[in-house]
Amino acid sequence: MLNDDTNWRLVTQVEMSTTEEPAPRSGLGQFKALITAGGIGTRLLPFSKEIPKEMFPIVTRNGDESLQLKPVIQAIFEQLHNAGIRTFYIVVGRGKRAIEDHFSPDLQFLEYLAKKGKANENLTHFYEKIRSSDLVFLNQFEPLGFGDAVLLGRTVIHGPFLVQAADTFILSERNDYLTRLATMHEKYHADATVLLQEVPDPRHYGVVEGDSIEEGVLWVKRAVEKPSEPRSHHAIMPIYLFTDEIFDALSQIPPGVGGELQLTDAIQSLASRGKRVVGVSLRDDERRLDIGSLETMLEALKVSLIHVEEAPTLVSDGGRAIPTADQSSEINPSSPGATSESKQPLESRSQVQKIPRGRKRAGEQVVAATHQRSKRTTRSRGE
Image (cartoon, rainbow, N blue to C red; front, side, top):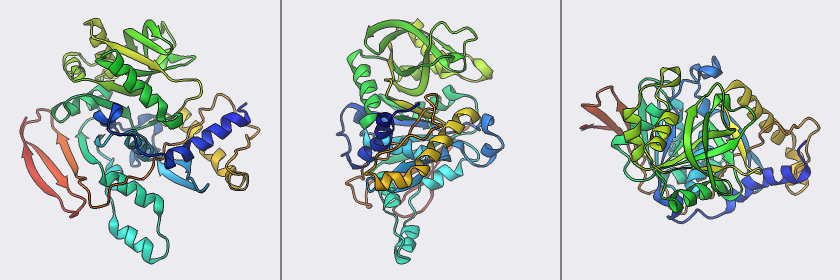
């Protein structure tokens, strides 16, 4: 059973993240972010046939105690934006147009809402975050694996970068898990830093083994994707920090589990070649919201319903949540990291680009749509 203190912490962390100032451009601010949303979501069919799983709504609370629905990919973007990241690459595929549309500010819609007396401050703040960022869409023509999605970034990303799957959100007070990832990555001059969580049955995850170097931190010696007989309970969560070394590793490994290019295999390649791979564990009070499968999506639904059912209590009781009788400790309670509004005006430098990728990459076309003019232009990009 979840106790009162746990519930209070879970519902107030979102409120804190909506009012705190964005992190300075240091630590994670030096990283670019690659968010992968190209998978077809076979475990969620038929729901995911035309609706991207990354657009699955989750319930969040604002600082004024009101509730709102937002897609999980928006929550991820806002959390990373609040951590200081301003350059985003989002990998999409066929059927993911809804994601691109959601991240394209619609000023006419805002004006329409304002004229009707229904102005939406949350949507305005989201658009301001987009405006203060550089946002690029990378098109994954075929679902060839998580590693293939990351490899798409090779021609456009230079320097350290963060990778996050768009179906997993981490609830962490003041986004502390991101700070720990960046701190350990820099402290140990790592080529790869992976987020870990102890799970009872890690057979459906990438699993690592290694030596403890400090509390909650491992030197990773071995990484295996979906092992039938796991040798540890250190499961990889799909959030990573990398250097350019990961691109070389991905380009040299063969397809792995499921005939797909596996990011875990590339991490193992780095470790076997003596590169520095660090694992950072989630704390017990940090929660994972995973919509990648039916079972974990049901957990997300339960968490959302709990928030909705508690709404009157949250308003009347000063934001303090009362646990429901059927809440189980096996549920991963989470809520998204809605972040503070950007201080940059709407007339900012944001530019959205879409970069499709063919098998040979030669003669690729780049379709750039600037928000300021709401136009699309086409230019060629070499290899």
